[in-house]
Length: 40
Image 1 (tube, helix red, strand yellow):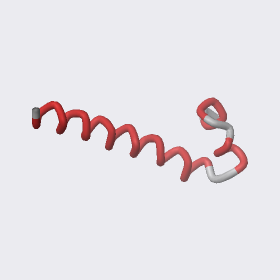
Image 2 (image 1 turned 135 degrees about the horizontal axis):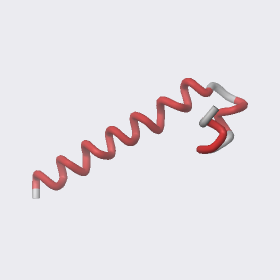
Image 3 (image 1 turned 45 degrees about the horizontal axis):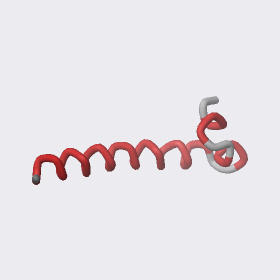
Image 4 (image 1 turned 135 degrees about the vertical axis):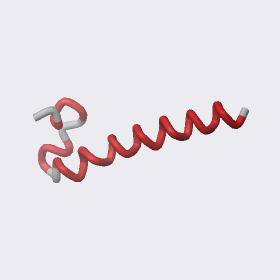
């Protein structure tokens, strides 16, 4: 349902696989930012 809003590419492909990629990217990105801030 909310898949088409982000890209529309996942609508024709696999929504489950495409929906997990941005979630993992967000989590990894937040972790990297936190680690970078703590390391400074």
